[in-house]
Length: 79
Image (tube, rainbow, N blue to C red; front, top):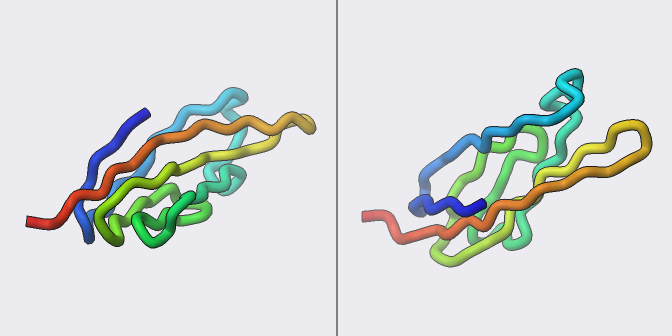
């Protein structure tokens, strides 16, 4: 997955998990480079902080099995 946003912009990550009983609060979101973009730990809202790239990871556990997915986010300069 790949996303481009601008410094200062916000974007809410979409997701689909199975089982569908997994609540949004069960998903943990992290950024590998918070200086480039932050992400709300339980909201998935990404905010561009400075130009560059980061990897956003979504993780949840179901029945003792941990699942995760990633998205590369490129943050571009604001116009």
